Image 1 (cartoon, rainbow, N blue to C red):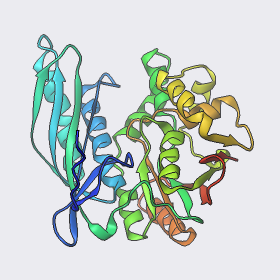
Image 2 (image 1 turned 45 degrees about the horizontal axis):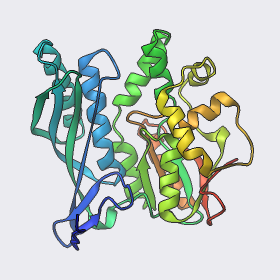
Image 3 (image 1 turned 45 degrees about the vertical axis):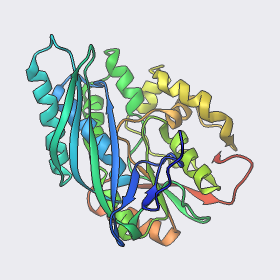
Image 4 (image 1 turned 180 degrees about the vertical axis):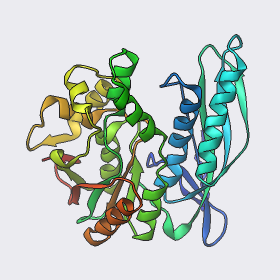
Length: 314
């Protein structure tokens, strides 16, 4: 297939970025993304909210504002339509919370439920944040703690406690809009969101794209309460093992974290937080603003010149 070049395509698929960005004027561009997946929780409304928040996150990771969304759903013919209605209602409510609109969509018959949203956002060209523009000396910020994959696995096996389930449901449903606003306002260098590849996988994409090395301080990386316990008890999702096999060869361990904590670095996240790189002064301002608005943000490492491996764990 021939490669089509368009000068208005500002961000395409070549850097495995969070979304595509297409220029529509001298100063503005559209952000386009799509994501959908099978249910990870039993409650249809909550599933709809989580799936929509996950799709919207790609726009926020680029520094943009969502405008409209199109529902994408697969649904069994023999299942009550009230379940589909609840899923769509959850997604619509979350999209509305983000300041955008659901303007339509498409559903097909399938043996398994799947749901997500194709989202279009807008952004000033000067505000675009890619996953390949980190700068030496930047500090690295993470805006949600890790552990949703491991605790979700415990939930599927009937072993997760109610407070822990409530915690991950709230976190996975939470938008990344506050972090996105802060990183744009304080001129972050680069950003991505943490999803299925886990912290290590997405940090690796940023480091490779920027041709630099990310040094992460294991003890500073925030974890969901009790995630370490579930990890140590063996609630390991298959995606975590896949991530480790794929990404661990690119990691240099200067000190080896305890096994349960190390698992969490590779844990696939659903609707995870943003990983943001910014100059020390701007990073501190980003963290302060996010915290002042009631959300979480922690500095977990720094960006250095390219070393033998793209990721270093201290």
